[in-house]
Length: 96
Image 1: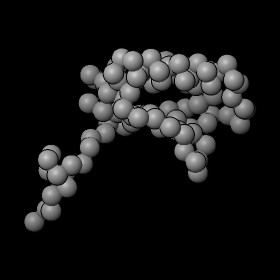
Image 2: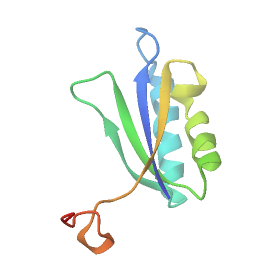
Image 3: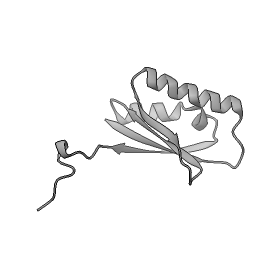
């Protein structure tokens, strides 16, 4: 399954360089494990999005909660199950 982790700032405090590096290292680890689909900050909102592959919702929660941004209390997260809409899986077909 794919999951979207929506990150939003919990405080107005600036992120330290050390915390940013820890967050990036977390994302790199997910990428090495084959769990990272894509990620990036929003340009019009204080926060970002991480899309991951996980075997279960419980695993996705564990991944989200070990993000240094979340662990530090600087960011909150919201978790959503996500499925691609493709012609091949019927999600782009016309409903009659």
